Amino acid sequence: MKILMVCLGNICRSPIAEGILNHKLADKNLSLSIKVDSAGTINMHRGEHPDTRAINTAKKFGVDISKLIARQFVINDFDLFDRIYVMDTSNFRDVLSLARNDNDRNKVELLLNVANPDSNKSVPDPYYGGQEGFDKVFRMIEKACDKIVQSLEENKI
Ligand code: 4NP
Image (tube, rainbow, N blue to C red; front, side, top):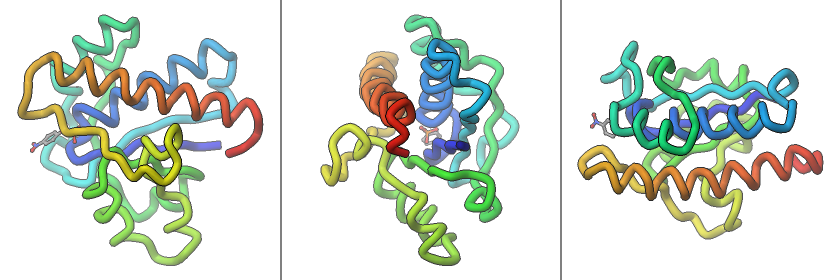
């Protein structure tokens, strides 16, 4: 099972999601069977480490994302990953615009729909706010990741 987390820049939300999910999978000894990565729909931050505010928030909650490196989402990711979780409706549109068929399209889901099916809520972009926005985003993402781990344990995804 391979899971990809996607946001706009791959320096705030999706690296937080990658870090949280990996952390939780390691706790359950699932790191070998489930691989997690993240990407952004734009290439502006390619090669950069996550935003310092994202690193600080994750660190506060015991998750180290300081070594992750941003990259852009590419069409080949549809072949490499089983599930593609996007942070907001604009990421959803951007990723779907690259889908080649229904198989690609069916892999893409809004992250927050995992915990609240069909709610179509977005993880807000914390980039232009302060540190507290990152803490809020961390908690939203964490809830969804708990649900993903639970579903993986129950073989539902
Ligand atoms: P992210 O946040 O999509 O959660 O990584 C952003 C990062 C960079 C920009 C916007 C949002 N930006 O405009 O450069």
